[in-house]
Length: 174
Image (cartoon, rainbow, N blue to C red; front, side):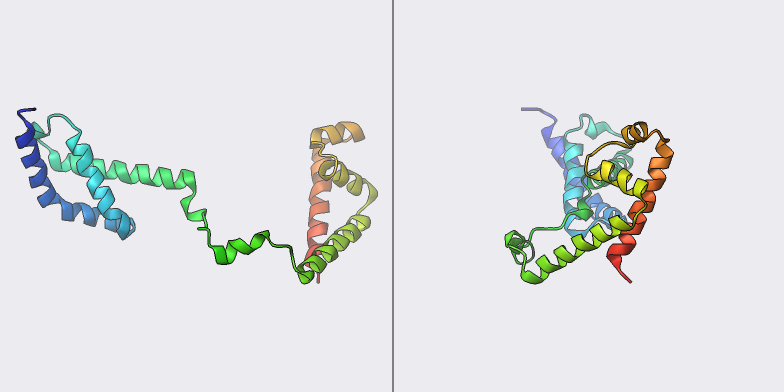
């Protein structure tokens, strides 16, 4: 056994008694949900336990709050990278019925929207319609369409913008 264990344990207990509440306040004031605050406080002390030389460390308070700050930064990075706020929890009542066949009203709406889209495509100038079709139905990139038609890529982009704007207006209706 390590002969420093009792001293280490005593230091951590003392620090926990003294800084647990200030650390909870620190995390709470920075928008951490209540159910996560205690976990973060615990992680601060877990990192402290894993650090060598805490018995002789002069600025323990500064180390504790620097660790807390690093934990917040790590938490923010993790939430941002996982886009946690954008996830919707699965609920059978809401999502479970998605596997069923659409009802007659929904099927009719789909048919009507396809008819409106086709009508909108027919209203486009021929060149715009050809560009739209090459891009969306034949999956050609703008560069290949430009080469095939002998025009600039920027012209393709303008035609695509006009086509999309027209079709959106057509589908949104009056």
